[in-house]
Length: 260
Ligand code: ADP
Image (cartoon, protein in one colour):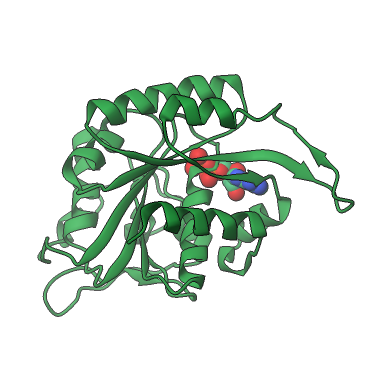
């Protein structure tokens, strides 16, 4: 069954979006979507106007995280109205075009790339300070499309403290350089777990932050803990209820680094 992507259309490509930032990771499961979501939440709390373009067309998770269910409508000028979260984050995700959230999107690369482009140019994003683009993991078609077809101002790379994760980060670095993009920062997720008694355990091994910084040449924006409370809030669409100093610090570093 086809997805009615052709219902998208119209819209003006010249959006007043100040910064388009892509969030990238070399492999799945390191928390790229979660970091994207929480960055948006913290930026909103600072009064920034934020949108998230869920570029993970075949495995979207942003809409679920924000509880933005339902289908987008068309605006008067023929563009697509993104859904708005309770906290005011504008969200566009493939899930919103599916009859059931669990329906698979079985598409080849060019279709995926075309959907990502339309999510940028046909969606009525309005005025935004930041459009965060949650990329699918890896260095295949979809992340390349975003880098080439969207006016990406910077890339944030998310990793976790494992040797393999750092090796995979190298692939991202090479891809971004190849496409003449700029890595604006790195985030180490799942760095540690903290007990209620403030004891820290490095579950996935010691931090690779120093290596990440030297490999990417970009500043470390934050080291984030593993927090089971987060997982359940994300699963129930209540990510905006989460508060953690580590994430607020991440957003502050992000804003300072990008200085708009
Ligand atoms: P990716 O986008 O890199 O594939 P996700 O952001 O979807 O990864 O995260 C994978 C899973 O791990 C999700 O269920 C998410 O809620 C959980 N997760 C990610 N980071 C953390 C964290 N710091 N603490 C707790 N759960 C996390």
